[in-house]
Length: 180
Ligand SMILES: [Zn+2]
Ligand SMILES: [Zn+2]
Image 1: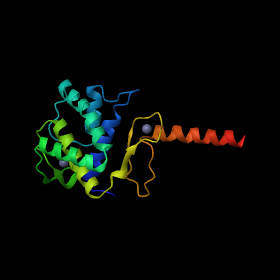
Image 2: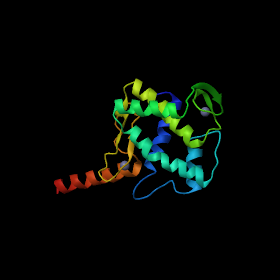
Image 3: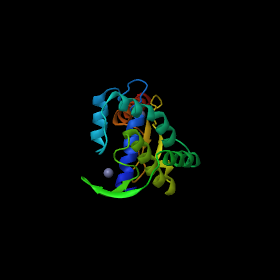
Image 4: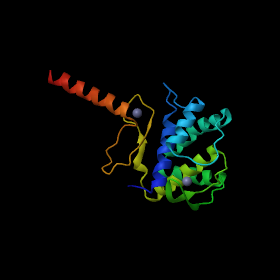
């Protein structure tokens, strides 16, 4: 494991959220999409599950993208701003299904606030470990996705399996064309 479990979960969630804003297909448009996201990342606490909440979560995406793709010093500014704004107060908590981990805002704070603060908390670890290179743009030229590479050998270049497969096929065809 590269980072603590809660840090990795928060980063994955932020990446999923940012990458849902794909210009060709937005995958966070309905309350069902929001529910899927909430369940996938095992959120607990307040979940209004209404259009207002969906709107605030969708609206976070450009800001999270900016943070995840910032250079290290700019990321520091953004993290500090997000922590101040969310009035973050880190507390260790333990609840099912997780062992001790950090919460920095009350469980009844709006989901959007908790996502911003959790992402900022996760980025503290990334910045302190000087691991910003774990974050980057998808190597697919057409894709706007952000990549989180938590692999041991830092081999991840594509944001998703479809992007990886598409490029593997393209590379294979290019090799065939040269060979032929
Ligand atoms: Zn928790
Ligand atoms: Zn991609």
